[in-house]
Length: 337
Image 1 (cartoon, one colour):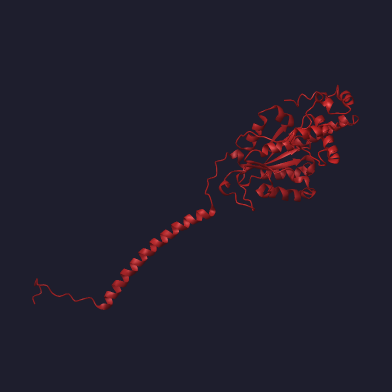
Image 2: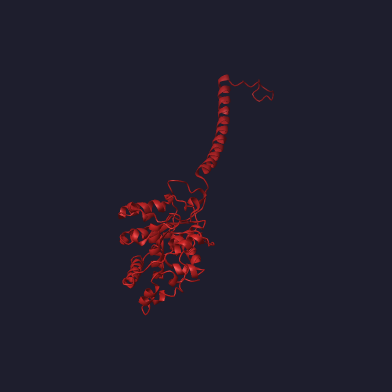
C-alpha cells in the first residue's frame, strides 16, 4: 500500500499490560482526590471540636499602661473561669481595726455582683505565725482558690479580704509591703475618726463575748433593730486615767500604718465618711474598677445614741476630754448623717 494512501488502517490495540497500568493510575488519582477532600473536612471539624473543648474564645480588653500592674487574669486550680477567663481581676485588701465598721463595709462590697471580699483570713494564728505562712495564704487567695460564700468565682472582677492591723499586718510590714507591691494589690484603709466611739464599741463587744446577751450567743454584728437595742443597753465604764493615752496610742498606730504603706496603691476611707457621704461608696467602686452599683447591707448599727447614753461614767469622760484636742469626739456630730 502506498505510504500516502487516505484509506483507513487498523490501529493496533494497546497491550493488556499497558491498559492495566493506565487504569491503575487513573484509579490512584481518583483515590487521592477523595482522600484530600476527606482530610480537609476532618481538619475543619477538628478545629470546631477544639473550640468546643477550650470553651469560649474571648479577647482581652485594652488596659491603660498605668493600670497593668493592678490587673490580673488568674487561673484557679479548683474551677474554670470559663467565659469570664478574660475578665480582668483587681486584687485588694481592706486594712482596718476591730470595731471600725469593717464588717459592715465588707457586706456592702459583697452586695456587688463582681466583688468578692472573703473576711478575716488571718484571724487564725496558723496563717500568720510567720511571713511564709502569710505569703502562702495570700498566694492561694489571689489565685481565686480561696472559696467562701462571698466568692463569685468565674465573674469576679475585684477579689480580696479584710486584714486587721493586729493580725500580722504591722508585725511583718516590710515583707508584706514588698509582696503587695509585687502582686499589684490595692489597699483600702478603713479607720474610724471618732476613736472614743470605737473604744465604746470594743468594750461593749468584749462584754457580750462573755455575757452572750442574745439568747446565749455572742454576736459582733446584728441584723435587726431588736438585737441592736439589746446590745446597746450595756454601758461600759471608761478608765479616764488612761483614756487620753489610749486614744493617742490608737491614732499613732493608724498613722504608723499609713506611713509604712505609703508606696502602695491605696485609698484612705473613714467609717464616718461612708455614713455621711453618698459618694464614698461610688469612689470605692471606681477604685476597684467595677461598674457602679447601689450597695446594700443587712447589718444594723448598734451604738447610735448620743454619747451620754452610751457611757456609764459620762461626766468623768466629758470632764477629762473637754479642753483637749479630743474634745471634738464628745458631740458625736461626725457620726450623724
